Amino acid sequence: YKSFMPAIKKVNQALPHMMEVWRKDFPNSRIVLLTSQTGEPDGNNGNDDDDEEESHPNDYTMTINCGREMFAIDDEDEFDTYMPDRLHPNAKGYELWSHCLKKGLEVVMDHAIRVTET
Image (cartoon, rainbow, N blue to C red):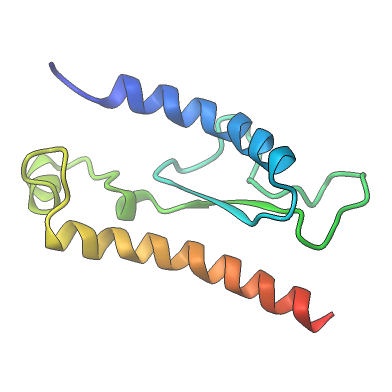
């Protein structure tokens, strides 16, 4: 065992496609992908605003790039302060992660407010 990174990279590459599948399977859902990546693998920003198809008010898929808040921390000592066993976040790690989760919830709630106001 050296690193989880190869497995994590495979998952990160598969997620954008999986989100499209989920979008079709659950058309009324609000899907927000929280990622540590600094951009989308396909160059897309995660928004479907450029699609020419008519969209339903609930149709959206957002990607929020959290970076450090999703443990994209290069400094090993700093990383260890949040995830000492390199697998499970401690209290500080969960606090850091909560900032990213909050961003995702804000997107969902802001969208819900806009939809109900129209």
